[in-house]
Amino acid sequence: MDPFLPTNLPAERVVARVGLISDTHMPERCAALPPSLFEVLRGVDLLLHAGDVGELWVLERLSAIASLVAVHGNDDTPDATRELPYQQLVAVAGVRILLWHSHYRDPAQEMASRRNDDWYVHLRRCAERGRRAGAKIVVFGHAHIPLTCQYEDVWLVNPGALASGNAFTRQLRQTVALLFIRDDGTPFVTHVDLAAPERAYTPHVDWEAGFRAALDPYSATIAAPDLANAVARLTQQRFAAPEALKAAVLRVSHRCWAGEQPTITRADLLAEVRGDADVPVVDKAQVERILLGKVKRET
Image (cartoon, rainbow, N blue to C red):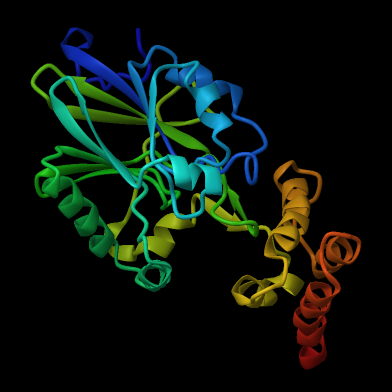
């Protein structure tokens, strides 16, 4: 018996079983695919990846489970952004599904949207995108929050994420979803927490409480208190060699994600940046001004 099949859906009426995954960010923020992922998604007819894939080899590994369709996200690798579409319309068992990450193409619009805590603005935008394509279901990523809801006549599904939203947070739950389509076209969705793959996981979202409240059960900071106030300044600055600096930050982040240390402290980050020969002197000085300058103002 399928442990993920909804109790009100007879197995004989299922005409398609689709695996949903998003925000793998591999290997930048996720070192390896959890082994339970392959068990949970085994036997699906199709896999849909809703963006922020990471390196394209991730798709090859996932395609060992089933044929796969993917789109790119706003924080994807150059290769994934170039080779994968912004959105994709697929048809499964007579049902149209719109797959997209749901970010804005324009970076300024994207940043402005993050300041809006109203869920309904985002849900309405996803539903309108699906309705324009004649899709009954919209599968999207980007939020790092597992959810299922019906917005007017469109089903909206986010499978959740495997990786964190940025280098200074930890994804508290790694989730995927299974989309079952009944013989009359009705969709059913089951989420699975990959840390507890033997049973279904039911996410709860308080739509009125806003996006940030919904994110709290799934994301937590790994920046220590002495670094937390400087994170926004670090992420908003322009650097001469941003990729080299990001790599230095991510080395510390991965130690936290692997459980080797609980947080990133100011001293951790300074030591990593100062010791990296690929980070230019001008960037090292800028990082020191941001981190040490903040300390001087507080003392």
